[in-house]
Length: 151
Image 1 (cartoon, rainbow, N blue to C red):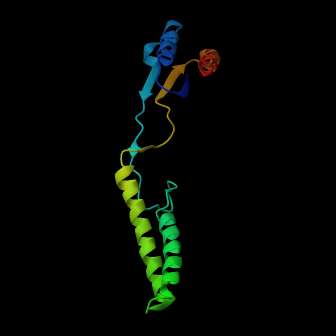
Image 2 (image 1 turned 45 degrees about the vertical axis):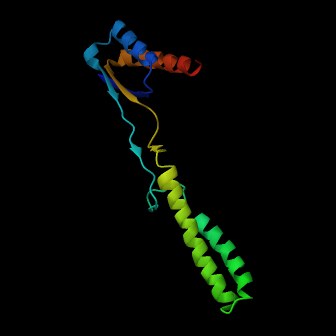
Image 3 (image 1 turned 180 degrees about the vertical axis):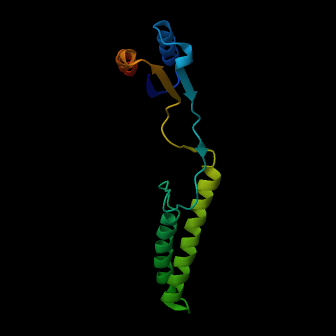
C-alpha cells in the first residue's frame, strides 16, 4: 500500500476530484481529507531574533529625532542654553514622538489588519492505494492540478 499526500485550497474542484477517486475504485475509507485552519496573529511591537515582521518602530523616531535635533541646534544659537543642549533636547523629544506615532499607528489604526501565518493551502488530502493505482492517480492528480491552474 502506498500513501499519496497532497495539499489543495478548498474548492468545488477538490470535491469533484474526491468523488472521481471514489468512482474509479478508491474506497471511501482510503481517502482522508484534513481541513487546515490558518492561524491569525497580531503584529508584535518588538521583533525577536527568531521572528521579524519587517516593521521598524525606530525609523520614524530616528527621522524625527534628526529633524528636531537640527531645528533645536539652529534655534539654540539664540537661546541661553546653547545649540548643544537644545539639539540634544530636540533629538530626544523627536525620537520619542516618532516612536509614539509608530506605536499609535500600529496598535490603534492597523489593529484590525492581521497576518496569515504560512501558505494558504487549506486541505491535506491523503490517498491510500496500491502501487499500480498510485501511478495512475499521480497522473490523474497532475491533470487536475494542471487544468485547475488555467481556469
